[in-house]
Image (cartoon, rainbow, N blue to C red; front, side, top):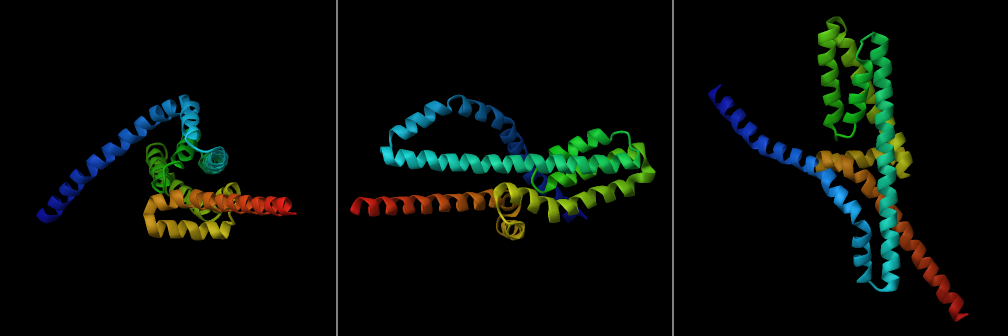
Length: 220
């Protein structure tokens, strides 16, 4: 027991600094993004001025592709959160629990937290059910588990696959591979990175084809 208590204290002390740093990072992110967006035109103009005209064109196109992929990924995540929130709202409302709208909003917001977000929403839902309707706790837990299964097996492949233009079956393989190689961050980053690589490959291939066609026209 003493050894277990010592290991628990040491693990907790190691966990606290990392958690505190993560919270500070999330808190400072909006401020960083504000200044980045505020001076984005100056940054881009200064960056492109160091490049040749042809390289600047390709750089602008590549950044446009990155922006497009990121935008599609965020829209897919928003739609996923809204869908989960709707399903939770319907389930909790059927059970007759008064705080269904608030729990649905929490479930939708927690979708933006990788992997542990749905579990956090489920724990909050169970705690609220214990306070308001203890006899319905198991039903509430069942609703969250069902929504989680639907999300993992159906919603994520369909919604994110559609927005990222990746086949749902391939996206499932990418999620499993990302989880195996990089854990939580692999599941979050591998889908948009895969979509970005595909779009960049298409752009490079199109640029090469256009250059070859131009060379043939000039030689003819």
